[in-house]
Length: 251
Image (cartoon, rainbow, N blue to C red; front, side, top):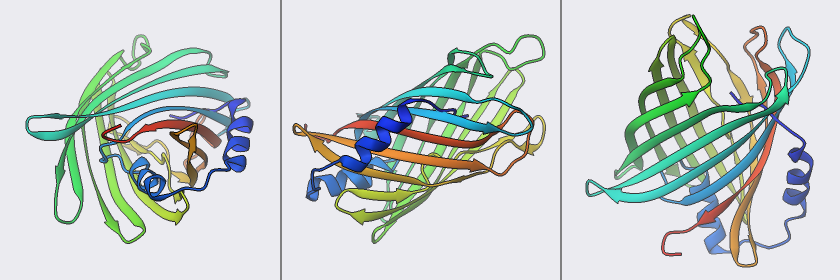
């Protein structure tokens, strides 16, 4: 799950002050940047600060690095994605929280795209009775465009020692124009099959902007969330902000 940090103010400032008007390329990149099935290489760094926890005092913060690398294999477009999460402090301590890798094989259709691929996760060992350090499963999802709208659904499933989690991420984004996008952002709905309960149900909104800095396309974004599920120690209010270097195909 996402936590958060002091990087938020400067990211918000950069987002607000971004001065470069977006052209046709920025519009295309703005669409691809919110589509997990798009063949767009990106290097993303973002900070997530948990300002409030359910039934517990304190705050928490995480920094996430995510790389998405498109390539071709099995005569089909693939997207390799790696995410490393580092907890920087707060009630959850500090250190590398997890590293997740997956490869999505993308299948184009007349109505949009869908994809399927393997998923592995490495995380802190929860000790006896807790989650193990390794889990594996699969990811599957689809997206389709309707005018300025992008809609879809992305599902990740992980199974390991005392781990049986399915995450649903609804995809809904609207292109505002000039490189601006309004979307649900990283809204993950995890379901724990062991406990047979919903771990989180975030109300989420993300505002993003693609600009060029010295000829390099960069996307800045902010993403506040409120978790509706009242579980002791779970995130309640969070705010995320960050940026991504975008590398269009052929660059």
